[in-house]
Image (cartoon, rainbow, N blue to C red; front, side, top):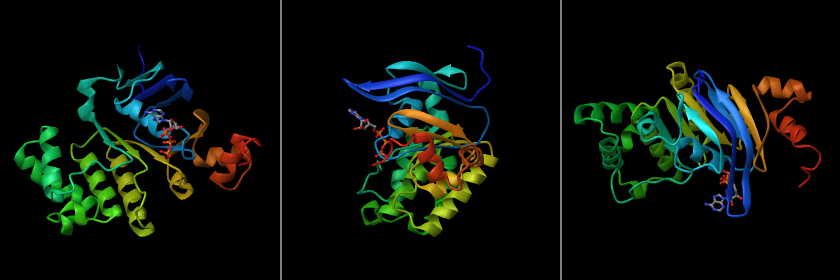
Length: 244
Ligand SMILES: Nc1ncnc2c1ncn2[C@@H]1O[C@H](COP(=O)(O)OP(=O)(O)OP(=O)(O)O)[C@@H](O)[C@H]1O
């Protein structure tokens, strides 16, 4: 399999029992960029990113990451994955949570301290490091999950609706941070159904009922459909059948 892409999703389908959730999805990422998967609730975004993260198996098709077929244990340390539901230890402090995950990633003690400082600054939680997570707000928990995903300096950062419950000002800051991470060489794969976030992606994959209906830069998608917003472009690609 000679392929210079970083991520290659090849004709991937997924069924849960008889339920067809994803159908024949193909796309590639060749260089660091922010790639957004945009689609309504239930479209299949989470299922797709779970397969790319190597925690769900495809029914058909292949996923290659750094030219290796997923799932592959040795690639796991290159992937930062932030699930839709926060997986945090509520009775521990943020710092204890971070130290726990740093140990799992095999990050040494000295390096852990450094990384914890950096990632908590990134998500704006430096002053809440010693707070019990139970006392965090929903948005703070999301940001802590993001901090954990960033701990091991992943090459591929997979974020499933990272900014749910986060206010617009902080959301803006976090997206600036994604931009900075990308410029430092991180590939970011992000799911969203928020249109202004979609606008900030370098490229988008539009997903509707388990199918990739369009891919391209936000500008391309708008100009190809002759629409002035991503939302209208999405509806255009989705066709008139998308009336509900
Ligand atoms: N483990 C599972 N078993 C059966 N069905 C599942 C399973 N996981 C997901 N599904 C179904 O697959 C479909 C796609 O779900 P998925 O969570 O991938 O969508 P999504 O686009 O991420 O939506 P949301 O933004 O609401 O999370 C849904 O109909 C869901 O009910």
